[in-house]
Figure 1 (cartoon, rainbow, N blue to C red):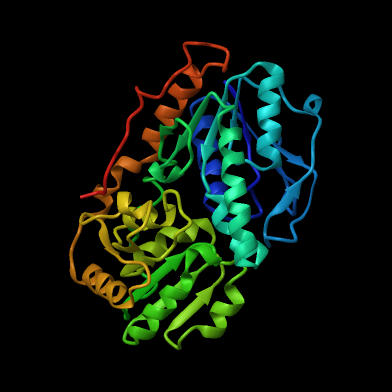
Figure 2: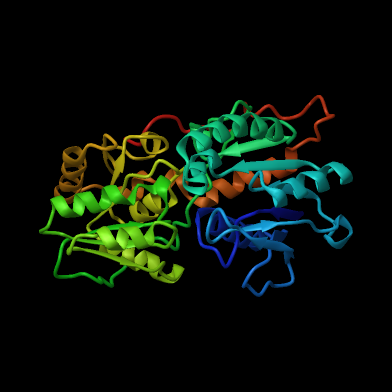
Length: 364
């Protein structure tokens, strides 16, 4: 099949959506498909199947661009359209599918309304925009043949297929190399933005001065986090992807207080490398983190977070086995089946999603 990924998040930016698209593309092409990525242009040299859309700097959210438009006649002939966001490139993909009469799939990656507070800066205005935005996205998603989401955290009024984006279990595995052999280290990796609540990680560092905390990431909150970081906390740039398994394997526990994840790839990647995770007891972690791979704590409860970290350090767990259900190989098998069976909206036999696997409840 010739598959088109239409996304508003892509290289040179680094986030879970970008990595997921890159992984899915590699896996699908290894299975014999042709995958084209249509994305906002930027400081990135595309290959022959990466097609940039002219875009402008984003004044509201550093690191992301605002795409404009690309004529459909300049895009390749596709068999299926898969959109990865509700912004202009995602809309372009939906328009392409409609004009060509192709099956259209949408994967929900990000609850964008949770980013409005950071982008707008005025809480009351952000709240109004959020209330206005969600019904608009609901209407947009209903125009697709199939909507997928990693967990029930989609929080949208649409039928959806439960399909975790998956992790590369062959890549993320325990490493022999240990960057921190002589210290107990607590790690975090992800964007340094408001919804990630990395300030909570620094509060834990201050409460646990006997441990070293290493925060890996970039984003609009970095300067403030560096200013407020206690002496035992280090904030460093995003690591090259090839270094992530070593980082995850080297830290003794991984901690997150994020409220902006739909699956939490970094937490599952850490688990795949043998590291337990302390996570806030909020979606999606209430479904993905349990006694088999970590501990949960009440968001904002410093004592609870500290206890969760200490319990992770003191308890042996087979965290890798606990997350095998999220292996991307399983995801790709389901994704191929979805592509082959998707129907256009005018087809009354359109797939309702009842035949798709669903993993409910926390990992135990």
